[in-house]
Length: 208
Image (tube, rainbow, N blue to C red; front, side, top):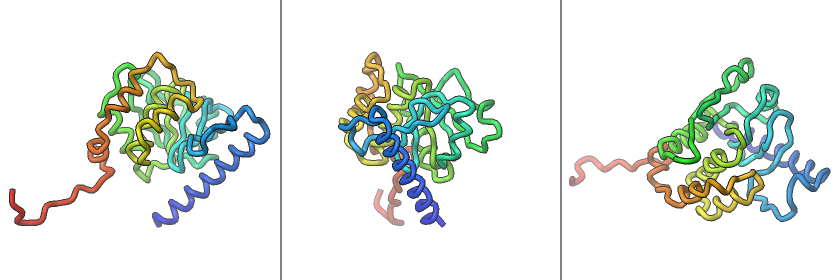
């Protein structure tokens, strides 16, 4: 069953990337010629500003409209994760059938506990694929997507920081603490706390 679910997600991912490539061909301004293929792919969907496909399990965007939330099903999205502290999406999501989680995440003071909550939600197969958003889809969203790249996908910190800042998502240079936060991550601890690694049990009778 899990193999079938993964296959469906891969097919959806291929379709999404094909749409992105087609739109890029129609409008060269959508994707820069020098943009690395590994970076999140931009998509144009009404009501979903700054929308990009990060991976088969993760999309990113700025604040969606109610119409935008209703469009998510066409992309195969199952869940919405908001990083906004003072704005909720429940009313706009009513009737969509989408799962919803809000993790208030602050640009001026990133917290490991918020990162762990993000990693647990995004990497739970029940929730995938997930759309993560904040207001602009740039700084908070960019930080969390970079963390997913580093902790789960095995990217180097500098590779993830480069995508976050140079990827065309609108990163605001005033938040220069965020790249610093990424460089300070204890990646193995985050993996353990998010349940992304199996802790090897000691054999019975092992010496203390």
